[in-house]
Length: 102
View 1 (cartoon, rainbow, N blue to C red):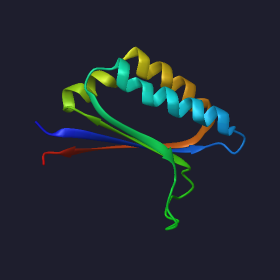
View 2: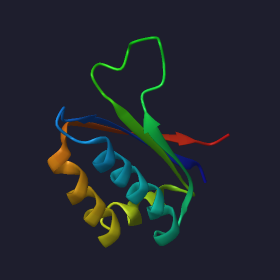
View 3: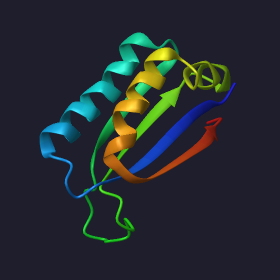
């Protein structure tokens, strides 16, 4: 079964403090410990000189064991809790999933 890479880009509001962003990123990373099927998490601020971030300031990548694990994560109460922490602090969000069968 192919793994699923769940990529999310966040455009934080200008008034969102670095401490709030750090707390949000920590909460996202902790999901790996409470939601079954998350094999990998990486996240942080935009880190390229390329300049193609279109105003998105941070992002994260979660790799799920398979589509079933991702599908169980989406309505998971802890995912919903963290999502509600994030939404008041962002102007825009992009979520994009790809299958990896390599």
